[in-house]
Length: 64
Image (cartoon, rainbow, N blue to C red; front, top):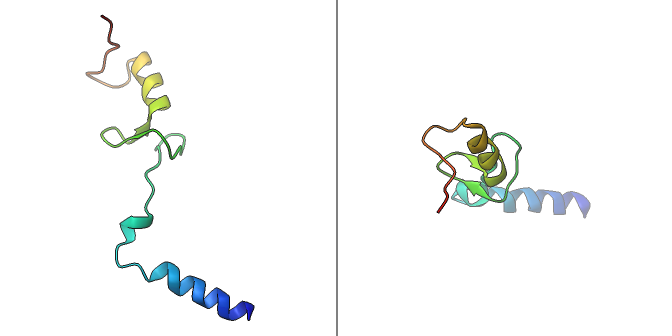
């Protein structure tokens, strides 16, 4: 019974025609899955730290 359930589980996981449905964007630096910014490929926390250090060209802290 356990063997059958394992086989059924693997078939179910690979049955999807689109593999991007299970793809989760993660930060390239820390691996965080939430707060991901597609344009930069990093999470908001890493983005903020890099922006403060001046490592992201063209990004400045806003003030008004």
